[in-house]
Length: 319
Ligand SMILES: NC(=O)c1ccc[n+]([C@@H]2O[C@H](COP(=O)([O-])OP(=O)(O)OC[C@H]3O[C@@H](n4cnc5c(N)ncnc54)[C@H](O)[C@@H]3O)[C@@H](O)[C@H]2O)c1
Image (cartoon, rainbow, N blue to C red; front, side):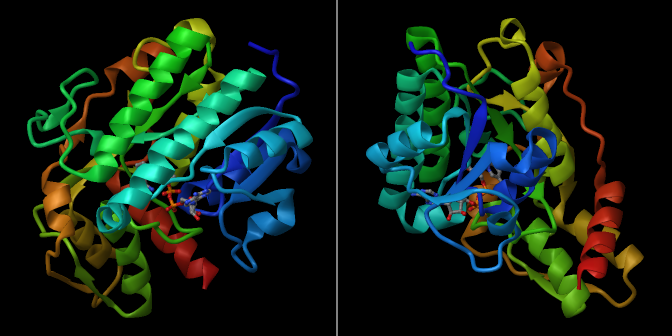
């Protein structure tokens, strides 16, 4: 395997929910010019287009990815491009092509050029047979297409490490709650949408039932987890490298609505489950993240109350 050409960073799917925050954090740490944002689309006015280099790039385009890596002297890829759960169930072939095909593109380019890779997994790898508190090591039998693509991604990351020495690492992100950009078509989007609706309309129709409990994480914890995992020395990363469990907080949709009502007079929430309820029901309510704690000292900082305070404060000051 070739030596990495440089330490410039390429981020795929950069204009999505996580990329918006992650690219900003990486640019603060490594310098604007060292972090190349890329996506299959351009979003007019997006802050990342102004703050540093941007390349239009589809992750299913292997030649295009190879050219960008050579031209930009990339040494590391944060691979965020994906089709998320709710969107993926509507377009399963696209989900397979982007999530599995895109990850193969990234791992192949990494093998060729000696790059390090961050490629996130999801709590969607779990299924109805997972214990309510999901262990790190457990049979992975997801019911969604999206979940199956994420299991494949984890297996590929481990295999490329074992077979070719590609240093690929991943995290099973819980539902992520952030304020800078909209959620991108996942089942946990209600935990983001509810804040916008609460502040703009004083009411939210939640698409899962009030007693639906899912693992969630505030974006600042997720970005810190990502950077801490990538900072960890290679020898401390174990066989969970394809998808470390990370725990943030866990709450029901009703508890989230109550926490917002306590802080926002007159806010009301109705619960009207749609097809996304079944995806939520197939996932665990809590996460056992002892492997991440042991291997790279992971510890979340945000609980429900702190996250709700922060979201309301940030969004109120933004508008
Ligand atoms: N947000 C969450 O709650 C969450 C939870 C678990 C895992 N994840 C994982 O984290 C990663 C990032 O998620 P996100 O929430 O930022 O998603 P998102 O949907 O907000 O953003 C994904 C981005 O990928 C881009 N994209 C789609 N197809 C592409 C292609 N062919 N080539 C290049 N870019 C393409 C989209 O334009 C979009 O900007 C994904 O792997 C996702 O599965 C997210």
